[in-house]
Image (cartoon, rainbow, N blue to C red; front, side, top):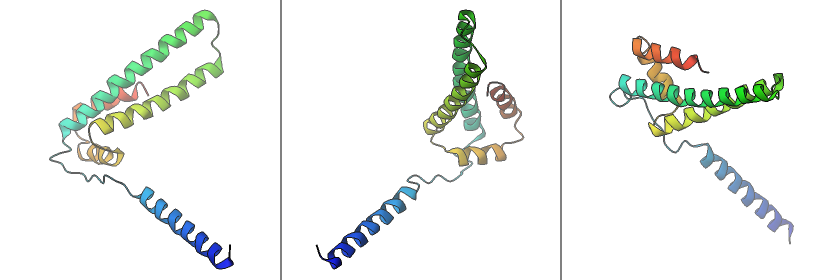
Length: 132
């Protein structure tokens, strides 16, 4: 293969990599905050759903820890491992709830700012923080 062909092939590969990175960096579904769509009621629903699913996951972890304690297999590393697993699971739950409600983290943060004074949202967030 000639030097010109090698350079042409490398240039084409570089162009392909650049185009791939560009398309991967684009957000396919750009969502903008719209108060008529992203209502206080939707935020309440999202936070409540996060709480219910998070509390369920937390309860499951507590049962597992209780069983480990009974068997004498629980130590500091086990507890720390459960904490990390729970946080990872909460992150997954958060992404699922957001996807189910067709929002993303940016929209939820905007909703939280917009409806910061809502007492029901505050109460639900307090409940949520108690399990995280």
